[in-house]
Amino acid sequence: MSGCLCLPRKAGAPKEGSSAAAAAKPSSIDSAASSLVQNQKPTKSQPPPPKNMDAVERLKSGFDQFKTNYYDKKPELFEPLKAGQEPRAYMVFACADSRVCPSVTLGLEPGEAFTVRNIANMVPAYDKNRYAGIGSAIEYAVCALKVQVIVVIGHSRCGGIKALLSLKDGASDSFHFVEDWVRIGFPAKKKVQTECAYLPFDAQCTILERAAVNVSLENLKSYPFVKEGLANGTLRLVGGHYDFVSGKFDAWEP
Image (cartoon, rainbow, N blue to C red; front, side, top):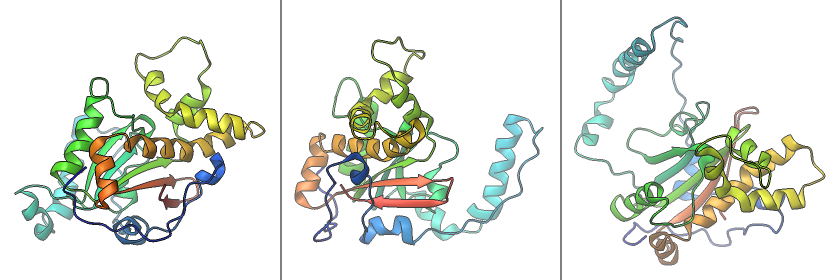
């Protein structure tokens, strides 16, 4: 994607390994990308809402807490956002799983990251007719918002990754959309099953969580504006993995 702010790549960045397990191994990240790990901001915990609260009232109550404890106390953050968004640093692809909101886990402020969430944090290869929703988001983020880093974040115990690894050749789909969507990660599944066949299913899922991120990072390179940004040095791709079981976050560059 052209016209991005310059974000130089760190010299000597490690390349992806030859095996699925090695490809998932994180490397150190600097500049804007490193802040995903280093600048996580502690969030003030709020008392949980009553379990018997009406669903709509829960939303209203949540907003009231947000407005009182955050919005009204940070005019220096929210006033500029009224004029428009300028998330110069990040575009984030994350899973729709309710346990892994990237704004919470990475301490990203409103206006800091242009975010897309879907099943298993997949990024399909360029396809103007089939995946226009994803393509339009990437194009807008890089060509209009001038983001410098596109981050794809996988996570532990991902249901979409489990569904991908569970797919059987020739079996009929159980859902209208889910199986077809997670097949975007099929190259990662094939690689993990070939190289890690000796491991139990859950262990293969753990490796596939990261390997599928690498497939999405590779798919991003098929978008002409991403390819141009990478060639110009104005755009970087970063993979991430959030393990909410052990409370860890890793980031790496492909």
